[in-house]
Picture 1: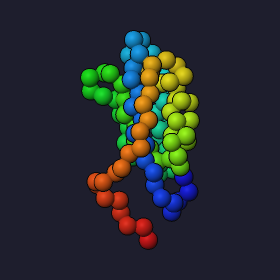
Picture 2: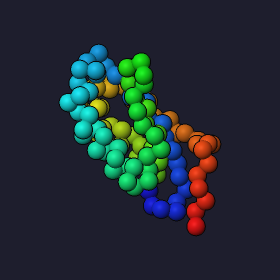
Picture 3: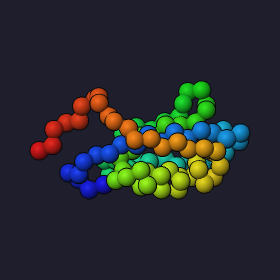
Length: 102
């Protein structure tokens, strides 16, 4: 997403499949590398697993729902079988407020 453009956020909910917990450690580094790249680009709002072990939540900035879906579908947790389902929804960030742009 280009700097200065309107931020559109998407919540990506990945639900672990039956072997998700067993597969997760082997794919974690690649999964985190993709998220860290988004963070460097200023496009990652938050990410992490659910405390109950059922899956993960990622909130990202993307240009469109199709772009968010493409990002999610290419994630190692999806391609490697950790997530058996993903749900992507537009997300409105209310708080915390973003700092004003110069």
